[in-house]
Image 1: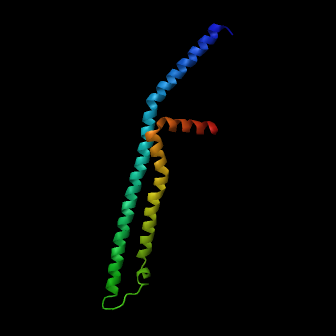
Image 2 (image 1 turned 30 degrees about the vertical axis):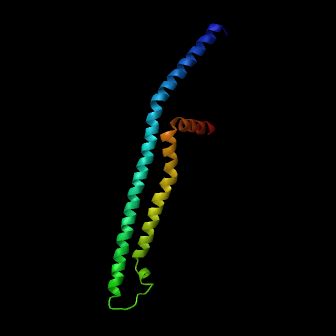
Image 3 (image 1 turned 135 degrees about the vertical axis):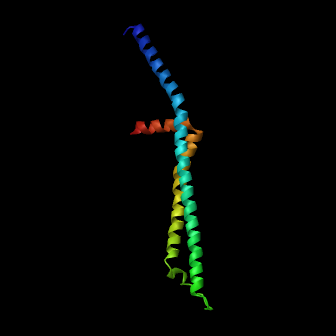
Length: 135
């Protein structure tokens, strides 16, 4: 190969690298913002589910206690098994389980995404590229 041909190939490769790095420098902050926004959105949705579940549990707990108090009115004793004779406590337990799941799942999934894309977008992009190359 002639030296001018090699020089022309090197120039073309240099221009391709420049164009790619320019595109990446404009696109990377947008993509990092997108990934962060998605993680924040899931966190907000999870917070809403937690609040609704806790409110449901508290309301159902108060209603069950009021119903038991009405049933035991005039009686001097309180039976410990009265509370679980009603179906509502089981609904409260399910609501609290949903609350725990809505807190823990996004915590483990979104914290990684938030930290990676918010503080280290170049490293997250490199990680994405390396994972793609491994496949």
